[in-house]
Image: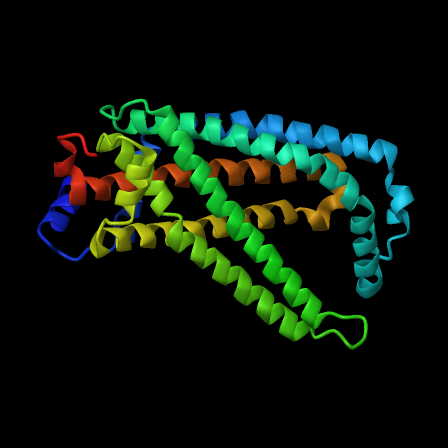
Length: 314
């Protein structure tokens, strides 16, 4: 199938980027070691990070228990009253959480870019044996990806604050319809914007390694000059796989909520087990499709630029 698909592209037969995704999924599925590498580096960072968050959360609650914030009197029957109470609880804990985030976020960001740079380099080397070990360039590009993600998240949170401040006020009746219209529009808008831009920082490491580029900046610059045909397919793949991630999240939420009608019979322990299993399912499936994304990018790189990889690029 792979040979026929690539032949179609070389023969100038129009092929959408996502038409070959099933083929790429099958190839990745037949090589579980690829997904294992992706899971290894992500969980190597994620497990210690979550453990530190858990420890810091316990320390905060030990000094400021939930009862002191008013959480014990939460009104579960009146959503409007509950919303105000939750806001007060968040305001109570905000300075203590921010004090932790001031040192935790920079340390976590540094750890992530190092671990992800090394892990992504090893994964690409396993996918393409001719790829060299270029940890510094990979770390720089992963830092750029994290910066783009952080900027997008900051913009989305700021826009959501604006929507809440302009549609939900204490002086007049809340405009819930208007608020939710803006919330959906802004969430989809920032999601689409990130999907249509972040592919540049996904293909750049491939260009650096497979084309022997001298620096991360050279790979990033070339990623911006790939041509409409090539970049269009990369953007399409990135957008579709972003939608797949949302679908996986919905499926995991459905799985975790399915036993709720039987919670009395199953017990709290079983409910926690189902929730944990749903979370693990989402994480593993997400890692699988991350590898599929890289596989698709590499295959299209072979078609559009593979012949240019013979000599080192500047």
